[in-house]
Length: 276
Image 1 (tube, helix red, strand yellow):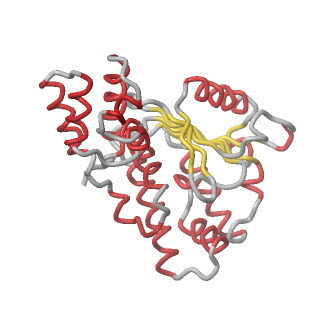
Image 2 (spheres, rainbow, N blue to C red; image 1 turned 180 degrees about the horizontal axis):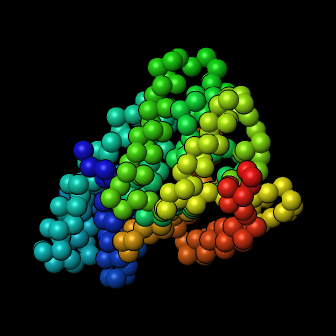
C-alpha cells in the first residue's frame, strides 16, 4: 500500500486543473453552466479533498481545450486518487475529516509545530496517548484506546523511518511539560522520549518558557505548518478544532504563520537546556 496514499496525488491533480482553468479564463460559473460540475464539486476537485473521476477530468479538459496527451496524463492521475493510504486501515479510530491531514503529514518534507497544551501526536508515547484518550472518553473500550495508540505509533514509524526523514521542529509551551498527563511516571517517560527524539538530526524540540511573558501566538492556539518539496504540492497551515479542521494555503496566510513561528522560535530554548 502506498505510503502517502492518494492525498498528494489529489492535491497535485487539482492544482494542475485549476491552472488550466485559469489559463483559459474559465470561471466556476462557466464549469457549472457547462453541466460538468457544481461549484462545490469543482472546489473539492481543485483543492484535492476527495477522489476524482476520470470522466470529470476529461470533461474539464475538453472545456479548457487541453490537448490529448495532457488530458490522458491527467486522467491517469485521476485513477491514482482512489488509492488508499495505510491510515485508512485505522479509519474507525479517528474522525473522517482527519484523514486528509494524515495524508499530508505522511508526505510532508518539513513540519513545524506550535502547541501550548500537549505533546504532538508524532512525539507521544503509548501511555501518554492512553491518558489523553481516557481523559476525552473515560468510557472508551480497550479496543478503542489501543486503536489510538496503534495509529500514533504508525504515524511515527512512517515519518521517522523514511529514507529521507521528515524535518520536524516542535515548539511546546512550558505547560506541556509541567502538566502530569497520566501521572508522574507516564510524564517522566514522555519527557525522556522527547529528549531521545531531540537527539536525532532531523528533530528539533523547543520549549517556550514562562519567563518570556506575552508572545505572538497567545491568541491563536496550536498550529502546524507543513512544507513539501514538490511545487505542485503547496505548503499548508493546519488548524484543528474539536469538530473539524482548516487548511490555509493563501500566501499571505502562510507568510503570517511563518512569521509568527519564527518570532516565537527566537524566544524558545532547547528541551535539553530547559530540563537541566
